[in-house]
Image 1: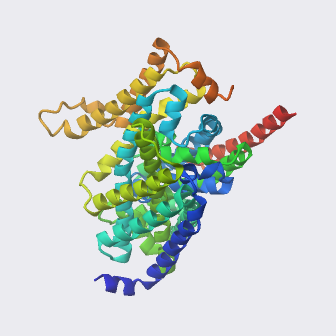
Image 2 (image 1 turned 135 degrees about the vertical axis):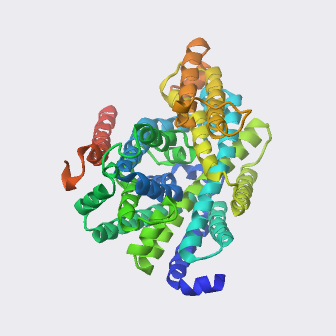
Image 3 (image 1 turned 90 degrees about the vertical axis):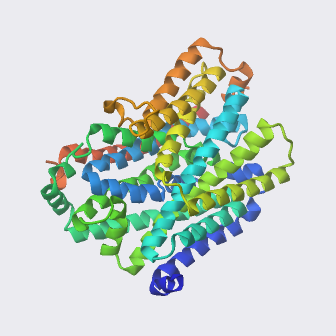
Length: 498
Length: 40
């Protein structure tokens, strides 16, 4: 069956093999550039603006966003363009303006290479470091499983290959280049992946728009299906639109695999150029939603909204275009997976094993441990993805909500408000993560399981992200006003005053 | 009705995108000027 699939789809195979080969070659070429754990984790703070900006875009917009965004566009119509616009303004431009410069300076002043390391350096709180590293590591593995599953589904649908082979092929290539080349390989491959993604999405949008008869024709045809597909909030409603836009935009402010891009950029000048490049590059976030709306007109009868983008691709693009688009989707998934792998391995080795448990390691041993850890975590994700739990998509939403509720405020307040206290930070992490988790369990299982209390019906559409983030905010502000700030020595180091 | 028959309530998303790009450019220029001023 697999041999037939490969012969029948030889154009797809040629494009994918060439593309995956290029990624593996980049990892192999950069293997000697990772000389120590800091190089492995953040590339020795030597990365330029183009690579940083486009790798940020590639890590932000995973295959889940392309396929899922298209599904939302198909289901809810053009009001979903607001989600893409929020991704650009809040999730990208404002994140770079508000966080970028300060995170780069603070992590350099404190000489740290991970987010949990920053929490320790800034707050002198070993508890905050261990808690953040553990929660981030655990929930990012869940996120990785769903990203891998998304890529394997694309192989399955577009190439007619067995699901397991899609998991093994994409997983093996990512593991190879990440373990070989570390962060530098991840950002350089993400840079290539970002370009492939932008080209693929632009191509699909232009050809689909031509096929539907242009933008005005699209709006007219959607209106005849349902006027709610062109108005805002339209068929989605304000609650769904606003909470989803907030989760996928503000949520990124607490995601370590994106924040790490700020540590590694060379200097402020590069960061300024990077802001402009990343904003323009992130504009592609609008396209999956627009393509989903076009698919509603061109492919109205599909089994599930998740099939909107693959079905549209099959309808409007020839085999070469389809192969390029598949490469774009695989690119989006791979760059996210690889970025997450680096974060988990450096957090686990440095923050939990060495600093948390007090083990000593030579720089060479730490680098080796990082490589082994990224391979192990990748293999665990791969094994779970071979037989993913039915709840994996629900768990993905869990993971974003819990990670953001843990990291968002301790990071933001940590770089702007000296009064933020270590005790309030730790309490905010624990309360935020617990509130997000508990709320999602209550809303998911409460209505069907008798011994779990269900929230009132009017509140069930409120996502755990909102509950977790608001709880964490209240705890960090009130707690900081009631308890002592971090030691002066930590504050002076963080602000570069010594 | 906005451009391409799109209702203004939805076309606002495109305006938000344009605002984001302008904001990034203006910030980069202002920040560069501030840095230059600090160095002098």
